[in-house]
Image 1 (cartoon, rainbow, N blue to C red):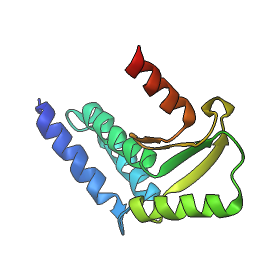
Image 2: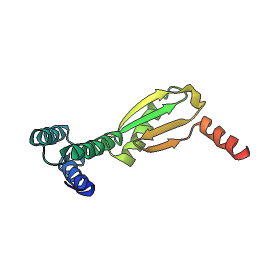
Image 3: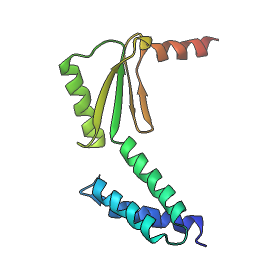
Image 4: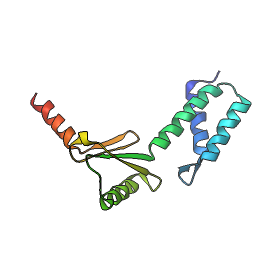
Length: 131
């Protein structure tokens, strides 16, 4: 039986083989998964699990959720998207949502990165500081 480190190493190599021009190629991912399922090498389920985790993390790092208390005008949206593309690359896809609970400001989540410039979070930090 292969060790966990070796299985993760195999999953990382498969993941790297699915990258084309710095982006994940969906067809390559499907081919890798189909090949693993069809051939069923020793430890293939653990490799699939580790591989799927890497794919999911890559996908999440290309999705941005931008929440604001009010509807953002097109100029502000374009500026936010431009800033996100500068930081994460042109593959990032921004989704805009209205969340009145924020009171004001914005909250942006890209993968595990979160920027919270909302009035709500500032008030919560003040409350924690003085209580």
